Image (tube, rainbow, N blue to C red):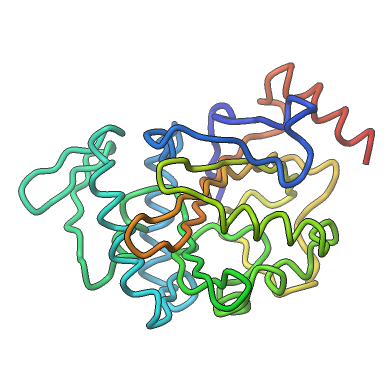
Amino acid sequence: MEILNTTLPFAPWVYPAQRRLPGVMPLPRADWLLVDDAYAPQMRERARLLDERPQEVVALLPEAAEAAGELLEEVLRDLPAHGFEVIGAQVKRPDGICVTPDPSRPLWTLGHLLQEDFCILQKQGSEHVLTGAVLCFPSSWTLREKLGRPLMRIHVPVASYDAGLGARVQRMFDLMRPEQPLWRANLLRYTNPALYQPRAEFAPKDKSGDGEYIRSERQCLLKLPRTGAVVFSIHTAQVRRGDLTQAQQQALAEIDGSA
């Protein structure tokens, strides 16, 4: 299924200084959630996946239950600023559909409210570990393989995520403050426009340097004030290559030329 944005709502990789890994930047607390022009079709696809593939797109370890509940509370508090309306026990989405939040299924509820996928990471020993997630739009990975794994193990297939980068990322997680979220955005080229693209580690991917579909993930980090868990949110946007702005096309050519 082809679900596309009219334009990319974020593209920090246009600026050379923001291409260096890990490439994170501070973000105003009020801006960590995003509703874009693909909201309605993306939410229909999320509802389908949550209905047909719940065991593949939602997982929560027992130790993350409190953090997942806190995450839902934080999101519900922030929704009115993003075009949502609270009507009694229901939340009316920007597309007019009403959702009744279910505190017993916080990640399932989040999956029906926002385009973002949400991953919960908690400190266990010396590293943060993935302890829960709603992941409807994976970009060539699976929740089943990553759940319960620490950050370094999660990123084994990523050649650029070496010990040095891993140490910097872990230090960043350790020093995060709830009032100061962070964000970055990646740049992917796909030959397949499907938003749901699970892949086993090291399996062939529908990626290509000349792929027709330019996919970018706005990845935010937010530390929850009560439990101290770190939330990694992933907002996926996708356009055809020809719909990039001139500045985005020029930056893409520069990045591909230096690869």
